[in-house]
Length: 207
Image 1 (cartoon, rainbow, N blue to C red):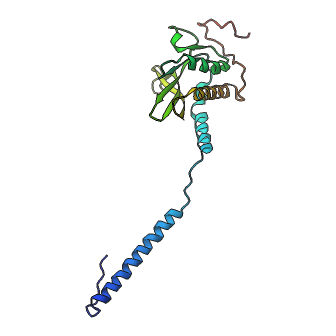
Image 2 (cartoon, one colour):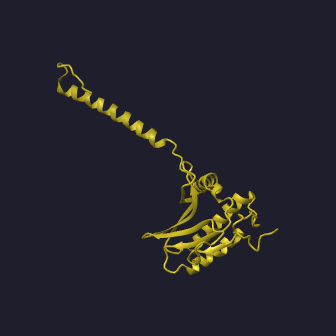
Image 3 (cartoon, rainbow, N blue to C red):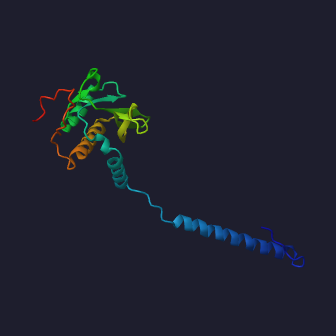
């Protein structure tokens, strides 16, 4: 923006007018900055974030857990996984379906419909834990094409390197979600799904 001053005013008066213009411009900018600073910025709380994540998991992921008849489990990314896998197994036993350690999984084992892994990654200050469920799925555009895909996921970040509590929490949340998907009320009673005719029913199946 250009300002034209009458020649009769002289330099001092022109300087005063120009200074007034600058003060007005800066005052307007200051008011705008103050308005932005005083604007209400809503930052979700940790509880709200967890609630949103739970809602998204229930809507998008829980349907994939319906009808799973058995699963293999394991922990990836730690040197000695045995103690942590035993801890994971103790939680998964509440599912009420056959579970087998991934390292002990034999070819053609039935009924194993999904693989549950907790992948551990450590940074300089924290440990990131991802619980991932993979299943064989069919493409909508080509139902005969089957691929292995991630159908469920949950994550935790904990400070330091100690992660046993996080593994228990992730495993327990998976159990709760599975039971919710299959029983609506989260009952710990095992579901009774009829096996295909090519697979012999389990001895524990109730008639």
